[in-house]
Image (cartoon, rainbow, N blue to C red; front, side, top):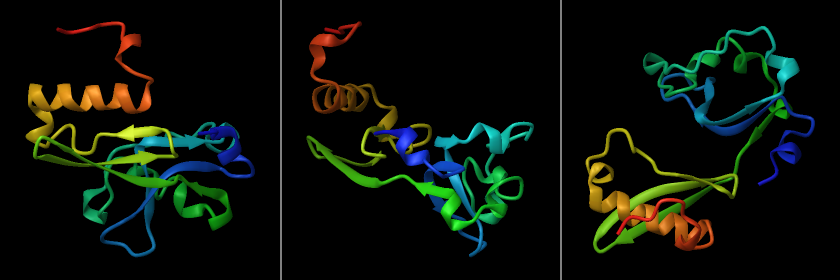
Length: 141
């Protein structure tokens, strides 16, 4: 993932998502977004959700910044499904920009909160995306 290349000639880059309640509104998910500093310098960016408008974290920037951007000002990160099955425990996650592994729902899904699942997903990330568990700083038994 080359953020500099993705940002070339753009003001923002990230995981662009449509608002559910307003067909014209959209937001960049707050967990994966980048901004050209000159465009946001002095702005009081607002990464809180706007649930009434159907926007998750990052929705607060719609009226502040995103509304005024043209289509050519925005770089939408590639999203790839990372559906996993760990011994019958299915998980639907995403790769963003070809390099950012997003564990969806980590703050509220019961499955993700179990120690066994956390171990399985951790092992998967290390083995699949980080070159193997040998380079872990902390090695649990």
